[in-house]
Image (cartoon, rainbow, N blue to C red; front, side, top):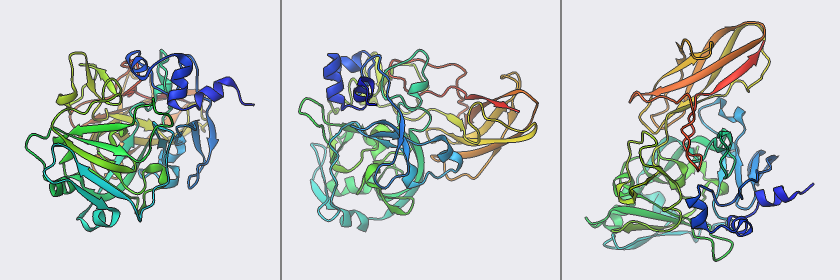
Length: 403
C-alpha cells in the first residue's frame, strides 16, 4: 500500500519542501534536511539497486540506502553492500570514454581538462578510509530531528585508489591566494529551484597526500551508485565532501557560496571537539562539519538478540577522523566498570578498527556498552550532543542480550 507518508518520504528534495512551504534556506535555518517534511518519517524497506545487494531504502528520489548492520562484521565493506547517498534526483549514467574533469577557477593559473585515462596516468595512491554520512544515526536522535532517518548504516569502509588531488591541482598551477577547492558532480537537480550540490574544502586539506580523486574501490572500478567513474575521497572528513561523479574542480580565492555550504552541513560553534577547522567558512554562530568524531559499533549482535548462558563473544568496529583508535572499552554492568577489548587488524588511521570482547552471560538480560577512545584521548559521549540537524551522533552504544 502506497501511503502519503511513503510518497513524501521518497520524494525529491524540492518537491518535499514545496509541500511543506519551506525554501531551502528556511529549511536549513530551522534545522531541517531537505527531502523529508517535518513530522513525517521515511518508509524503510529492503530493496536492491542495480549492481547492489538489498539495502535499507530510506528514499528513492534522491536515492538514499543504508547498509544492514551485519555488513560491518568485516573491516572492508563490499562494493555491492556499500551505502548510497545522494542529495539530488537527476543522476545520469556517465560514459567513461567521454568523461572529463575540468580544473580551473580564479585560483588556478592554467585551467586544464583531464580524461579518465589522463587521471590514471598520474601516480596512483591507495588509502583505506571510512566514508560516513554526516547524518549517520540521525534516526536515533532523541528528541527526534527531521531529515533522512539514517540508522547505523550510512557508512562504509573501502580501499580507495586514485590520483592525489594535490598532483592534479599542481598541473593547473595553484595561485598563492587560493583558499578553497570546490567540487561539482554530474548529478543535478530535478527542478530549477533546487540548488546544485557544490562543496568545497580548504586548500590545506585539498593538498594533503591522502586526499584523492579515486577511480577504484576495493580493486574494482567505482560502482555507479558510489561515484563512477571518479569521485573525491577526503579521508577523515564526513561524506558530504566526497563528491561523486566529479566533473568540475575549481580553485577559489574567495569562499564557496551556495546553500550546501551555508547554511547546510554546519554545527553550532563549540558544540563538538572538532580539530580540523574550515576557517574561511566559519561565522560567529556556526562552523562547517569537518572530521568524523570518534565512534564505535557492536556488529556481532543486534539489540535484543538471544544468546546461550556462559561465554559470549561480542565484536564490532571503531573509527574516528584519522587520529587512530587507541582502545575500545566494554562495560557489562551499565558503565560502572570498564574492560579493554582486543583490537584487531590496523588497516590505517582512517579505516575501521575491528575489536572483540568475551564475557560471561548470566541467565536473563545482559547489557553490553561500548566506548572507543582515540589517540588524542577523545572518547564517545554517554548522552546525545543535540543539534537540530542530527549530526555527529556518537553516543555509546548499549545493547541487551537475552541469555
